[in-house]
Amino acid sequence: LHKSGNRYAFAPGASPSEIIVAPLPAKLRTLIEDAHRSGGRVAVAPLPVDDGRGAPDITRWHLSESILDAIHTPHAAPGARSESDFAIVCALVAVGASDADIAAVFRHYPTSGKFHARGRSGDAYLASTIANARTSHSTRQTTAATVEQLRLWSHGAAFAQLLRDHGVKRVADYVRTVDALLEMLTRRCTLRTVVSVRTLGEWRNASRMTVWRHLRKLADIGILTLGEDAHG
Image (tube, rainbow, N blue to C red):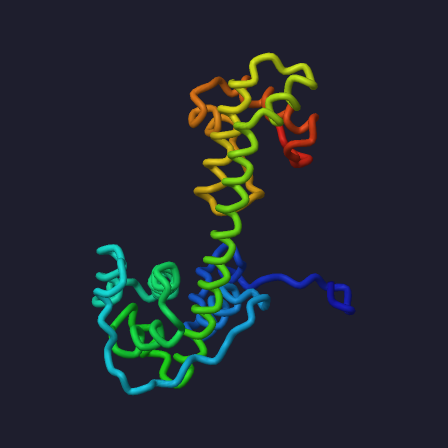
């Protein structure tokens, strides 16, 4: 409402519902992607300088065919180049490549093309990608180790006795439900996730109601926590 008392209005044909939103400028999109990937939480080390060794022999690492193809051929579309590079870096981190190794791969192979297209800012882009990949790898290792400990515990006598102490008679059924849940956490690389009771039931080969009953009981015992909006 204007101070004159007149209401503001869009010109005919110019309201948000009548026009096409302009595409995001490429430079702004890049800034948003980089900020999203770093999240402001990961410490980024400077990219190692080129030591003049030339192109590394990538066959010394056990890399999948899809990663080798991504390194050699820039297939990724402009909007997916960051994801392609991140996948390459994650694979190299997983096989033990150093930051210098990874930098050499990107300096001497095409990869997605984004590193080379960024020019002087390419080093900062790759350094951020490496930092995030190492954080992701560390998280995966920690999650996998925790899940394995939980799996061993859930198959032990202490877990079985805990269930019996709380009135559970069919302990093996609960163990199978926990196994399915832990497998889901492993695949998602997290210890906290949104779980579809129907999907978990399919993994567990049990009805939705059976799985929901198990989850509620496990939550009552204190083995897991259900969100406030959890329902069967």
